[in-house]
Image (cartoon, rainbow, N blue to C red):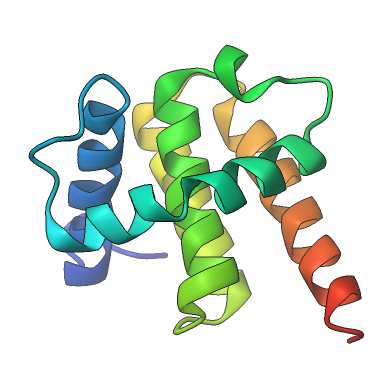
Length: 122
């Protein structure tokens, strides 16, 4: 279990907060956040495919920020093991989301990972 002071956890919190704020306006986004915003069409498509009963526009903004960050790390960045990315996203969902957020985030990211692996032929 990560501590709340873990630098990687703190970095993800900052990015998630920027993504959340960017849901309302993203002109002043930091560089790494801009990379995520640039990838939103692909990320939102992956999220929508993984959770077809939840249109992206209907997902709680904080859950969507967590999902976008984790999907970016899973699909584009690929610098951390998938289990680490998903575990961290669940922790963020517990800390910032609603009661059902951790379960929802876990399910969506698990499906995104499974879909990505099947597309790569793994």
